[in-house]
Length: 296
Image (tube, rainbow, N blue to C red; front, side):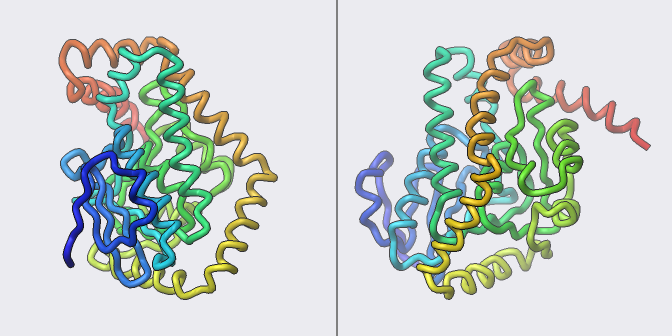
């Protein structure tokens, strides 16, 4: 398939494009019949989310929503993982260098990207594999369906970094299962994700793309107008239950937690400054691995 290449920051022109395949700085878009596959393209970092990547996701999804040739949007990851979460190095740098208003503005921009995905009139599927953690879970939770490879590792590890987990899981599964994921911060399997209602289908890794595309083709074959009405009704029902309000509150609380100097967060930031991000992540992992190994 021939690729059209666009320079970075040409979002003003993208909405009028009909995509075949577009390569951006941290994102690529592929087309298979009426399905558009938005691929996070930082495989060396398990597709960790950056500010630029968020912007590209928003631009891509908005353009694909406006493209009449697209009937279904798939969110996927290049390499071995879907998304390992926020780029903690970039996040720590913003916390150290940007004032509170700048950080709040940046988070609101990221929230708008997620809301664009959530409000998409076209059905969306997350193709999960490898790591799907933190910010990756936030992306997954905006999609209508989740198809997961059997080796996918899910988790909301924010609490381990003195950060607030997002509340959307409360609308996907029973309360105690959601609390376990949000407050313990432990990783869990694709099978467990399916058991608690987070995942629609679990397949062998070699069947992941074919299964995702088969579901996408069925969704794209549905009448577009009726699909849009049905999605609007479902989202309105969740909005009536307070989902949108809690989502907005969750982002504000995330920023508050980011600037509260807990002892563990201060130690994490000090280790980053002294020894680098990898060393800080090892410290957090070692602290919690010891506790988790005591479980019977």
